[in-house]
Image 1 (tube, one colour):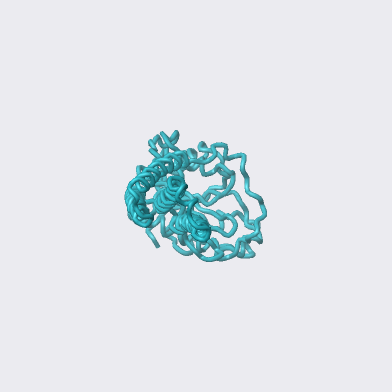
Image 2 (cartoon, rainbow, N blue to C red):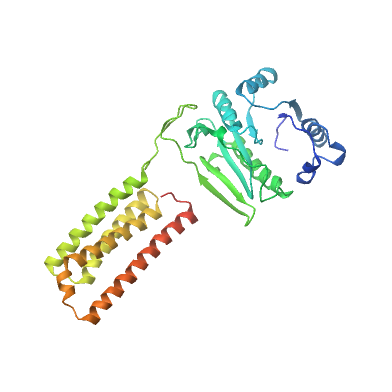
Length: 337
């Protein structure tokens, strides 16, 4: 249908009764037969112009993929749809990078349908660029899951992967989110994207030099917060000396906070950081304003002093609410902290 004329299918598994409910290629009469042979026959019946090369093999090394290329010729694209061995994605990635072949990888994880790797040579990053645990063989998934593999799951995942593959064939790279994983949630049928966390420096596989911004986010956030505290303290001190009104001083701090918020939202595209900047600025200002004007406050009547305490408590709750809102917006829009 899409002009593909040759398929090389590598698998070692046989058809079992549990496979019958997940696709339309196999029937009860095929149980016990090799999947690749039955698949080859079915595709030939659908389109006799397509040549299917079935290879009965469990791919477990780059050398085995090299033998396939040496025997059957060059490969234009790789679709990785197997989950064992656990480091199969590292094998496919190393082979694809060395031969400059695009590939896509997808699978299930409970109720999530995940397309976790899309590699296009010279565009984006490879699997080796990602900041994940290097000793991937230590981690295995349980054979049992709380979410069963239902018939529609392979169809949905296969449809999304096919759409992305065709876009790659046509060169529509601007319609693909490079360096992102596509995640389809079967619980609420929501499709989301999660950006890869890349390793800073040169990738040992593709040799791409990844310059990751804000690699030490917590330290930079702390330093930025200290600077805002000092700035707000200066504003509070000037307000005490110049005898500015509380409202007037807060307007000054609000203006400064908006400037910083616009700066980080525009240059860093980061909503959460922008909101947190305002929170730190206002909170530190309120504390320092109280310290600078402490002698004045303790001379206030009791009822006014209690009102001030209530006001500060409300202020704390408002600040906590803004922080919670910032994290909610981060989760909603997928912005990084």
